[in-house]
Image 1 (tube, rainbow over the protein chains, first blue to last red):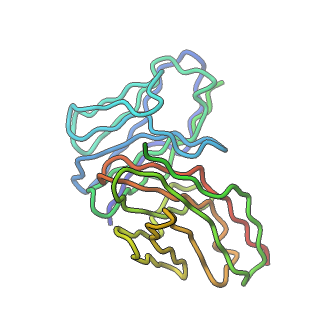
Image 2: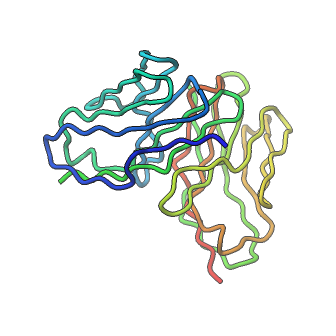
Amino acid sequence: DVKVTQSSRYLVKRTGEKVFLECVQDMDHENMFWYRQDPGLGLRLIYFSYDVKMKEKGDIPEGYSVSREKKERFSLILESASTNQTSMYLCASTDRVYGYTFGSGTRLTVV
Amino acid sequence: GNSVTQMEGPVTLSEEAFLTINCTYTATGYPSLFWYVQYPGEGLQLLLKATKADDKGSNKGFEATYRKETTSFHLEKGSVQVSDSAVYFCAQTNTGNQFYFGTGTSLTVIP
């Protein structure tokens, strides 16, 4: 089975901190995605990547950046965390055939 | 553009009741359609999918039929169980890369 692993389930950070959320997949997928999930808003796409060192903005990229130095790893970076970035963050990868495989999510709280 | 609209919840049913969660989509062309399920504290898991008109996806007693004429992909189950309590997301994709999700429908099944 494809496995997508997010490094932390729960994270608490202070306003202004730089935050790294890590995601690793083990099935050699080219495509990886970062979403945030908020009540009543569903999933909103932050960034995605089709290949190493490639990145594309999603619907809500402001305040975020990403890094894809290796095919299996896709990192989401909050340059200066703010309280409105408190959310559940979901990473996914896909081979374009079977649909997305999601990680378990990271619940980030910014205080 | 591409979008997914699903019925708002929350939905509360008694065990063994019939479930329908409505989903409609707008898309250019003929997308593939998906239902994902999110159990408490977890990421999203693929529940079922359909890739062309009149296809029926099924899994774990859940079914959904791709209706091109009504641009719909309603999720149904004949007899729900307490263990089906979760949030259900309808999604579509044209390319297999970027997915478009509905806002999610929370289902609670009471004994």
